[in-house]
Length: 628
Image (cartoon, rainbow, N blue to C red; front, side, top):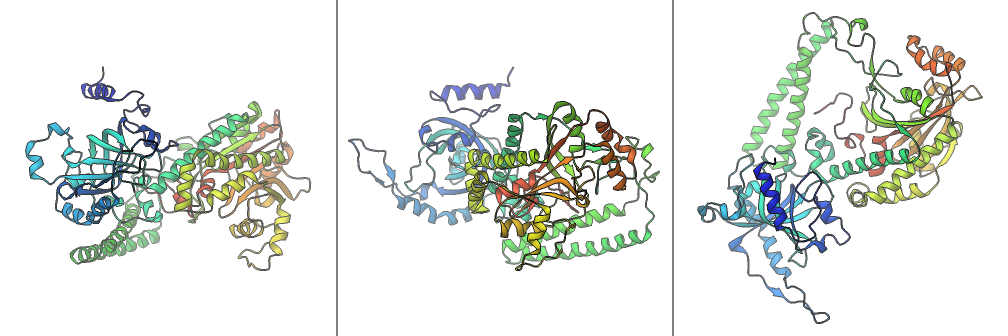
């Protein structure tokens, strides 16, 4: 049985809705804004419909009722014998806007708490409310995250028991019921707005402590508030694009006969710098390190006191708000550093010992996986074409705009195929993603092109329609060596790994587009990559794009038992027994099999033009940083 309140609300809504109601959001009694705003007519055809909407305040303005000038209506020229509805003159709107700052100052003297207030229908309000407080008409821009567009909502302040200053604060959550109408102002930017007749919920914010209520924060500062930053328009758009890329990846692979397989995040095998997984503590006797930490804690605590005094001084003086915000942000970072150092000061729990794998949770050394392709090979040897999508972890101590400790990869394995087949797959997959965004996230791409990178749409269109050039590592080195206008920090010689500056020169300056580089020296690729006939190179490739670097890596893995066994020994892996299961795949029913790995965050950088990978993920984890 439904709760009485909800049942009553539902019943009332159904009675009030006009014929052919606007479709509700599934599992909710509200209408998503994209349903209204992403129609071809922008929602104009829905005028007169009664709806319930919910969202967060992006901006607001208000007009005191008794200061409103009389509306001057100018009848438009009639057409075909019919006359359109009268609209107020533009001068009326200009007068209202000119008084907005005065009203904002007036609101500053009003009070309100940071909680959710009970909301009343207009006829339920206490009689004295209308006479004890000024009344306003408030204009909100509301976003619910379903679209880059916002809906204008017109609210009479008498509908709410919340003081106007609280109701209008940026970030306030509002659920409103009313009737859609075309704006009365001829200069309005929207073709539809909501005249609210009821406020069903108001979730207030505390402007002093809500970070987004300050002046627009740059992306790098928003990272300190990962739990709030999706409420910004830019991060919201990036998130919807990210979601579209995920769906597009599953769509492409499923349509091409790949089976989805979940592979483990915790593994006993892998290469490179890996995170250990353990439930045991490690005891350290490094007295010099402890002394250094203690000294640093004292220094940081002194800095905290000094910065606190500075903020108090700025608040007492007439310093501008931006200076206070910057000082508070600096103090927060210093406090975070102090907390981290204090954690290092804490003594280890009694009984802590050095890690003994046989006593650990799994009874052996385990790690967070670097790649899922190891385990995918098992399923490719049975199902043919398989893929997975999940987090991958790299413990390299690097803090750059292109590196994270935790990234998500789409990985495939294809039985009965070779390297050229994998390059074809990567080529088509990459172009499919570009085309999918252009066709399915048009509004978000339009916004991103205005806010982040004006060339992004043109670049995606060109990528989706043009062929991707392929050439070998040896040819790449030759091109780099011929460069006369560029000096590289790492000299391009055969056998060295191609660096970001090498790849940037090839894609941004030489070819001005995406390229696939293949046949790398065996020393710069993993031990399991198939050895080519020249015995010097391996069957591996990278799909490299302008401004970002490598987006897709791929390789044909070694299916020949003797060669793989020798490569494991050559690579110097001390615990060869951990790879016996991997060798078993070559002992029993071996098959040629390549695969690819798409770096989702790097794909998102290419699709949006964002300069830093930390802004491409909801909760970035990088060297020295794991906020939230």
